[in-house]
Length: 317
Image (cartoon, rainbow, N blue to C red; front, side, top):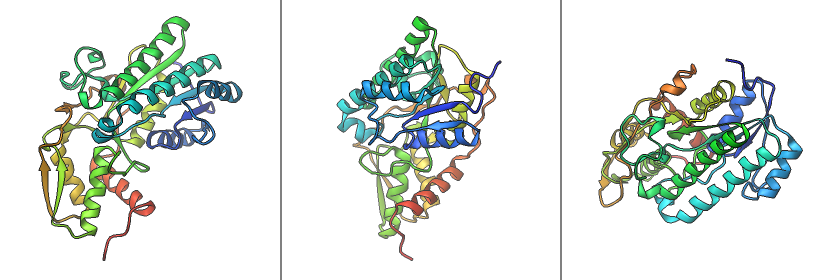
């Protein structure tokens, strides 16, 4: 297949200061691309007119839409309006603006939560819209499904070379460690870290610990994004995962060991579990020659070390 986006193409990374966007920007730069970015203080991507004006002026060869309002079960349950409306505005603004500005390639990053709560495992891309969503993150999922539909519509109506990727649960350096808005893995790192620092005997975690989840290091996703930009031009979204999952209890135990916490773990079963299992079929992406390289325990250790060096309060010696 011809290279659809060879370096040194100019790529605007929307959300370049976030977990995903910063990893994509690092990888693109390392691979010889010119990365364009604007902080939120200079460009509010919810503002359609400002976004289109920027893209017309910057004239990138491609856009990676990594900007989104994201969070875990608590954040999704607390702010459903923002998770729906902010993401819809960002997507409408960036995708429509890219088309109006003549951008020839665009990669929209969605989420594995677009799939039905009880989809057959591992989840193939064809499972989209075949059943009810997980209620705890339905507004966010619906916004992402709308983004997929928007990309497909631009492909069908205008022949745009726009594509979608659906990542599994992501983690890595630069993650959000705020306990009210974070996803499960950084939340576990912080809770075990603080329990160790404060010499607590027990850490109580949400749910039963039995749901199974898949985790992909954000640097592996960034490598997948470059592969997709260069080699894929299809109508269907492409799953991005590691092909393996584990229970939340197993994940918590791994984090506990990495952090060095020696107390007990307990689970509050009055709190929601979310989807019972969510493992992606990654055969479509693997067929393009991509494979994940960072093992989970290694990735957790480097993520913890990165957070310790940047933000976390020091442990007592």
